[in-house]
Length: 191
Image (cartoon, rainbow, N blue to C red; front, side, top):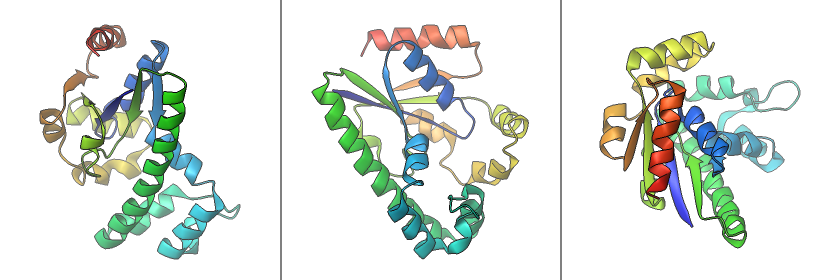
């Protein structure tokens, strides 16, 4: 089974690319969605509280992602410890899912991995597809989407230009969706 990572920067269109792939009948997974599922598991919550403190849970006992971001924003060591813990749990989940998909005879799986290069995961995939756009577009999308709290992270991730250099395929989310879909269909024909 071919494993293809989908990555890019904040608000560059990773989810849009994944949605197009799903519409084209491809098997897709999202690390963000996996993290969301993991955050519902009690053992994970307990580890998060040990690592970051009780304030990362809201009154209902759910994980508060904004509180986590605030905790790690100024503490690089804590950020690295959290990422190592979560990345390991996500990878364990992916490996279990890969085994299921292989048993089902799936030919290729596309996995949205926002921090692919930062986590050192690029070698774990057969191909890396990057979706990119201009920085102004990223900022505009974050502001319009009500995600201004993520703006400081733009400069903390690996520069998009570097991700583009390391990709097997690059897509632009500056083009109309119909054109992006055509480009994806063309790329799929080479898989």
